[in-house]
Length: 420
Image (cartoon, rainbow, N blue to C red; front, side, top):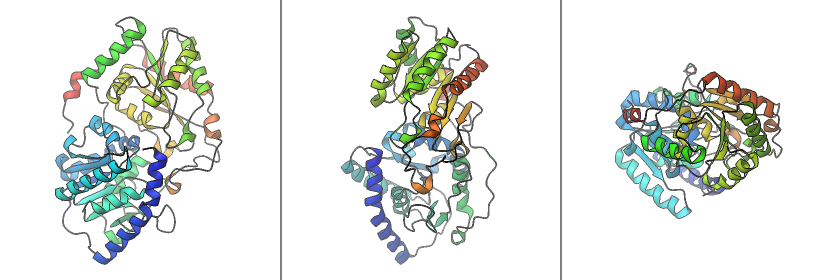
């Protein structure tokens, strides 16, 4: 389903459901008890944020062991969890969001499984979504950590958490996710007061994950079709679109077109490729044709997600707006030039020295946040328009030149290691 549909369901169904379950909780009146032996993370969508939660997941693993950490996610978004390798594949519980009947059926199946597992603690990492709060409550977990609206600070989603954390918009998302895990040690009745200080800045991916051998070979085959040779050329990737979640994040296609042409002109040995989802393939192909160079191609819609990460690993630089690919790419050795506009890198910037942020920092930016469900009245994204092609070109060439053009082919055999 489209993001707009999921939001409508979350609002129309979620509000009365949260109200009824809140009444149930107050009547039942069960206080948290017992030790925490099994932890469930709930993060249905926006799996770029899941990459930011790596440190939080590692801290949960340190508490209860890898085999006792679980994750609830939409089926189409589980891929990044499999790549990260922190949560065992069998511990990833999925919900099919392809249609409303599929959502209902798969949600009931997921809840039956979670209750059978005996989950002790559920950590809701969604920002004020009602559906995730409902799922955390119905998982059977005695301890439930998540955001609470309090005095109207965010969308109302009932009183379903035992540990009701107040959202702090001055703490980076990676650190805030870690605070949600640490909240398990706090007395449930103390919140919104939270006695811990924010953790020291951190939370970036521990190490790049080598792609699977089959994915590397598939990408090498596409590159041979493009270049006519076995040598992998130096490549800059352009992700020219964003999801329908926050359309304001888009940087104009004409600027990507100009950027591609100027990159090819500035570095004669450089190749440029556009990436994107299958539904973006037509637009990406059109841009590649308009560039008018045999050194420019489009791979949008031509790769699986695993192959896309292999393409990242074989390339030098990715240019993208603030979206999932900016975070997925941090799991590979590629440098990323990330364009921020309606959101702020202070909260959502990838924490790796390979991430190079451009942000105009206008007075009206950021305008989408957890408090407004990432919706904005703005229809004129000046924050993205103010990011000039000259600035993106300079940042991209600087990152490219700093790496050199040596062959950086990953070792696929290393992908077989077990992540402890």
